[in-house]
Length: 233
Image (cartoon, rainbow, N blue to C red; front, side, top):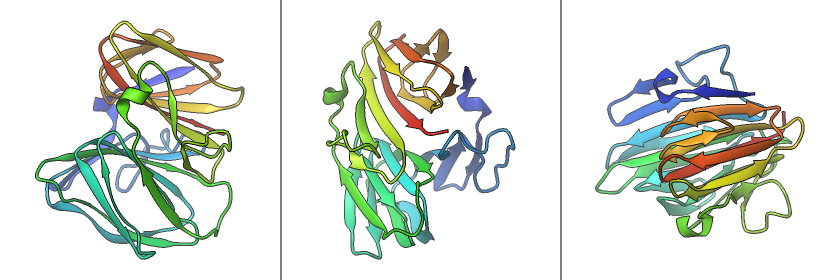
């Protein structure tokens, strides 16, 4: 089963400094049919104006992954972590027992991010934050684990949940496959470009909610950058 969710069908909000689109119910957007997908709870597509951002606020018991599509985001938290994550790179914040953080676009231009929240397997663990670069060239023609709760994904940022966040880049006409284990849920979004996944077309920033598919066969209609989340049901 593959359910295409067009970008135009997503919920959203325009706060001036922040233009947000929501793949799942979030804040004032409430759709009972889009409350999450497996353990995936939030996928926000945020456009942040220069010299603005999210002031200090708190979270608990959530794995929060930020994939930077364009520009850069600067993180600070009450643990003393400070970091700047650039386009194509990833940061992971395990909110655990509680963390207060801010996320600002301190760049001269617009920053665009995917913010992905996944429910952790346990509650109340110590909070943590980490970031690392993932050169797009290393993902050419293949999926690379960017963040993962699986020990074998040694180069990925750690997650405290039975899930993977993966990235890939494809040239027009190129194809890749991804095996989806029984009972798993996947959600795929092209950050750029257009693809077909098992015959279903996705354009830039569309979403695909996927389950009961043994193999995902993805072909690029045009050059594409992909983000895929694979979670427990």
